[in-house]
Length: 231
Image 1 (cartoon, rainbow, N blue to C red):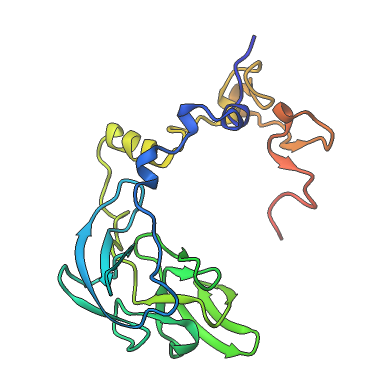
Image 2 (tube, helix red, strand yellow; image 1 turned 30 degrees about the vertical axis):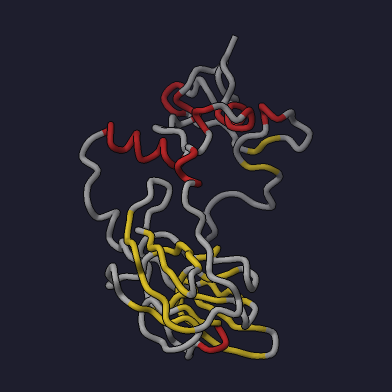
């Protein structure tokens, strides 16, 4: 009898595929919507569940944690609601066009949800009555004008340039993120372990799953409109 395929094991939610609790140790958020003025960075630290370093900021006896901006330091003062210096937190409607931002709220008051990983940033584009348009690489997204964002680029850019060197280090990196590592290609396994298994010589089988197939068979392309490279 074969074993569960990866999709089934992931759906079961075993420890292999579960994100470790330390990933949720620090909650990334912004201060209250009406908070304006000078804030102080009291702590700069790393988190196993985040690629970018985090900072603890204090304003009017209120603490909050956000991803660090590239170039800031512990003890530095930042502004909330005013100024466009790196690290400052402003509403999108108050940020000039072309400014780089990250840690953008999906809705006003919800805290940063978009662009939080190390080295990420977007550029503010056009503003109109429907909202503010932001360019993320070659993709454009529209946000409410009252959503807040941090000026600058998230710290930790270039972290992927440094080689991992050891398989053990990669194992622990993936474990903290709740991902299966390393990944075995479906055609490499035995025929009884996967619908694509038993591909001797890698004669790859069709990856289109039938529309009414059971969960264990729903692998590959699920009801695709087209497959293959566009000519």
